[in-house]
Image 1: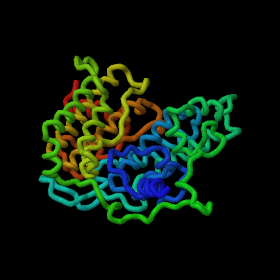
Image 2 (image 1 turned 135 degrees about the vertical axis):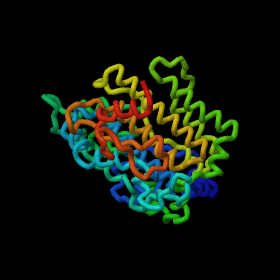
Image 3 (image 1 turned 180 degrees about the vertical axis):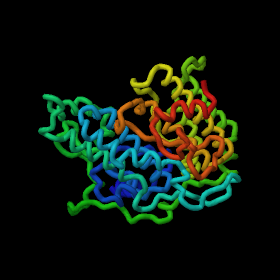
Image 4 (image 1 turned 90 degrees about the horizontal axis):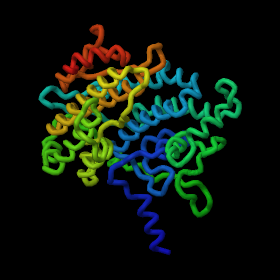
Length: 389
């Protein structure tokens, strides 16, 4: 019995050191207390611990990704919510803020990589609220007992799309059960012996500040990346990505996502290394509103930014890696959801300048404007800017 108690205590108090992939339970709308959401990882289980900067950052990236997946899953069933997500400050107020020059705000690095560790996620989070607001919109839509799309009730249709094991993560995020008529079954940790609710342990301030995103050029990260096995796995991500290009003669073996996971795995639990190597979440595919030629152009743009990211990784350059990673993410976002022609029905995006990896401002984009624009406006601009056919 003592051994069982000790094992449980160990599971609760020892932080994770492997690659972190935030599950829906860590991000759930069930946690109305923002401190829970931002400060703790392992929520809804037995391994609750203080999140490091690496884990907080991945929570942010994953929340953005989950909001986009909700749009894919039920956006057409909830047209008002979809319109609100795009036209309010929820998502299109977020995407232009994802490049590192905006995130840094102070302590910016210069072209020689001189500066400070420039991106710290505070206890109140950073970009958490906007994708959570989007999730709350869709939760209200799919759980309504009366809401209709045309003549059909939304909830039974949404139940088909959000049901099954594959969608458990989205349901956990929305805090809904499989039938969409009640909350998700998990709760915050085990009950105490007296039956009272369990609460997370005290926040560890040292861990909360650990493994931040460093914008400087790191000789340590450069040396780790350029070890033979690490470099081979980094280049494998490029090989897998190149195989997705139109007309490519390369063949995929393990897929882009798994190649990235294998590259990160060589950090062996070092969260600073993991933070440096982890690219913002992305998905393949292309919006059917783009032509076949335009889809191929977006694939080439995605690959150009992925290539730039690998170059930044080899240099140990945190600022450049982060910018290239978000450029790559927003190129995928543009391909997947940016083929719209009616204003307010898709993402507004922004890109950094490939030729100035430490520029503190985004590119002067379409029409000579330095700032966000539609993917349609950016497509010919980026094709020309990156020298693509």
